[in-house]
Image (cartoon, rainbow, N blue to C red; front, side, top):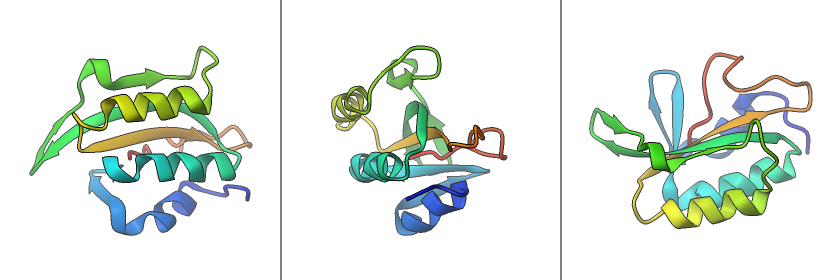
Length: 113
């Protein structure tokens, strides 16, 4: 399955996304399923940020960031990161890149799950 736009991800997880501005946050309980969707879509994963969303407040602890843009990390590294952070966080955000080289940040927002 080839990703065409960020919308492909949003549509699949529509009931599990909380929007804050142009950022989509996916429930922590759905983060591994979202990661599986990224793998199946053959999209590149550039990073994951963990977040605590409480009402209008958003907290993204610095220790809950996995940057995969400069160093080669595997999807298993990403899965391990999600599992380690899941009990502490309510949501995750993902920065994905389709095979055309367009990142979610370049197209106006981040896929946050």
